[in-house]
View 1 (tube, rainbow, N blue to C red):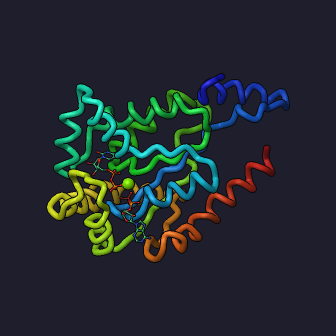
View 2: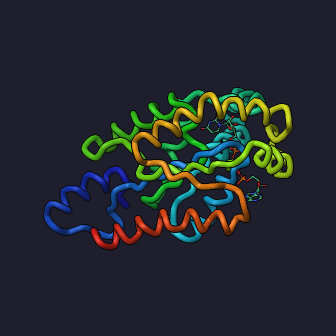
Length: 224
Ligand SMILES: Nc1ncnc2c1ncn2[C@@H]1O[C@H](COP(=O)(O)OP(=O)(O)O)[C@@H](O)[C@H]1O
Ligand SMILES: O=c1ccn([C@@H]2O[C@H](COP(=O)(O)OP(=O)(O)O)[C@@H](O)[C@H]2O)c(=O)[nH]1
Ligand SMILES: [Mg+2]
């Protein structure tokens, strides 16, 4: 099989000839952003079930590195315990690898980019892969949730995470405000941001998410 990035360039050539094979599609990239406990992972599962995306959770990829005892494992563990942000090159490399291994062309990138530096590093990778197309994600979801609700959810999460304690949550909320909100504002100005009011039941929240992707499905059917 061709990987997505090769498919992209051959896809362009084939589009010009008026033939396009079903598997050879331009990548569709969604960033899923929001504070700790805002429900990103929970809603990603529903998006995967309904719209067939590949789910890439940056936090899960980092925790997998820790578990695999890789060279960066100890550094990643300390960074997560402190609620700080792992160096972009480490996270971007993990995401890039997952995208290259995937047969899917629709990606949900959950919990990334968390800083402007993260965003720029990833866009550099995208621009190397697909210089003609541009380097922007197609959709950026923002799960907007009150802090007290996020704290309550994280303290009840029960996944045994080293960062799900009150002390680390406070640090993560500060990092979110200072470093992640600028990324959200950037995409808002670009007109890419879809803000979801992330309170209510999981199903109620998904009913805000569904029409966003449903609209893109209709688009791709019309064009493709
Ligand atoms: N709408 C919701 N109402 C109440 N609890 C929720 C809701 N959505 C998710 N949760 C729970 O809150 C916790 C955090 O959700 P999660 O999806 O892991 O958030 P994030 O990935 O943004 O940190 C989990 O225990 C999850 O089961
Ligand atoms: O791009 C990323 C994503 C996550 N993290 C680290 O991993 C932790 C957990 O991230 P995750 O997305 O799993 O947390 P969530 O927001 O889902 O609670 C964060 O607090 C950061 O320390 C990071 O450094 N860079
Ligand atoms: Mg999560």
